[in-house]
Amino acid sequence: MGVCPSARMAMLRDNFTGLLRLWARPDVLTCTSWGAPIIWDGTFDPAVAQQEALQQNLTIGLTVFAVGRYLEKYLARFLETAEQHFMVGQRVVYYVFTELPAAVPRVALGPGRGLRVERVARERRWQDVSMQRMRTLHEALHGRLGREAHFVFCMDVDQHFRSSFGPEALAESVAQLHAWHYHRPRWLLPYERDARSAAAVAPGEGDFYYHAAVFGGSVAALRGLTEHCARALQRDRERGLEARWHDESHLNKFFWLHKPAKVLSPEFCWSPDIGWRAEIRRPRLLWAPKEYALVRD
Ligand code: UDP
Ligand code: MN
Image 1: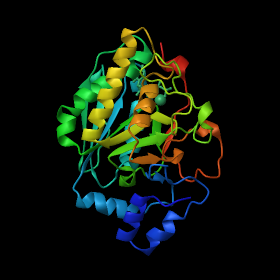
Image 2 (image 1 turned 90 degrees about the vertical axis):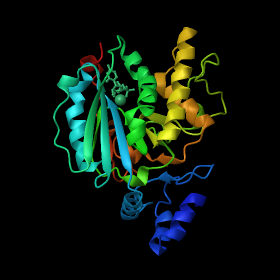
Image 3 (image 1 turned 45 degrees about the horizontal axis):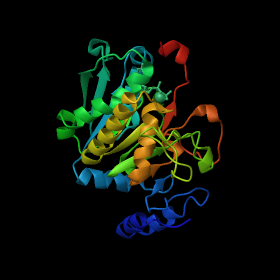
Image 4 (image 1 turned 135 degrees about the horizontal axis):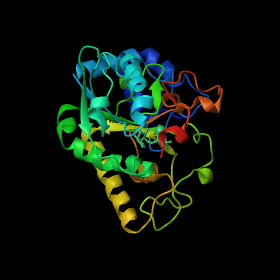
């Protein structure tokens, strides 16, 4: 596997252990064809990432939507485990989007960590709740969230943290390899194939299949991402189209056109239903079991 230019820079800056780390995972792909690191356990030094982030005095946003039954079912555990594992030691601001602010659980927050609740309308269909997130995030990134955070992660609520998800994951734009698809050949990836859709990815196109449950980046990069996706979703809606995997299809189109600066290995958002895999050493987020009958109308 090649060594990424950006990773080599970090290596020169760090020390000799950095050199060893780059070759620590010969079992997996650790660099994209455009030179972005794909970070796996063992390929980064969490202490160095922590130190670099502290020197920059960052505020990191974490957005999550909890609308309808997703709130009582998932939100408390998501936030409680984020307190244990998400960017511990950094300044963090959670943004919870819900139609029922009074029902947001009171979670004890560590020092330097805050939580804001933003009211959103409840869409009738679950697909619309999911897709509407792009527009709402775009507005938030032009509002208080955009003013107070430097970097933001946007996540699904139906998962919980299991181990450290720290500043090693930060970059100008960050995409998450989808746990069910990272080992599949490109032609099998579930991109939107209808050429009429704004999310269409033609045969032979596409780098990876990314999971919409985790994406992130700088405020500026995410303004661009959410604007692209919200517009594309709107264009499809006006034409009576709905992409195969909703907002995720549009996110995948965006990252095909605008390559992410960093890619997170499936360890960062793993589905326990897949079972044991040798390369999955330390899952950081775990999907909740899909209980659609309970949470979707
Ligand atoms: N969501 C929500 N209420 C809904 C539908 C979706 O709050 O009725 C939010 C929630 O954060 C959820 C995300 O949108 O995690 C994406 O939906 P879901 O997780 O059901 O999609 P999947 O991961 O199964 O593709
Ligand atoms: Mn989900």
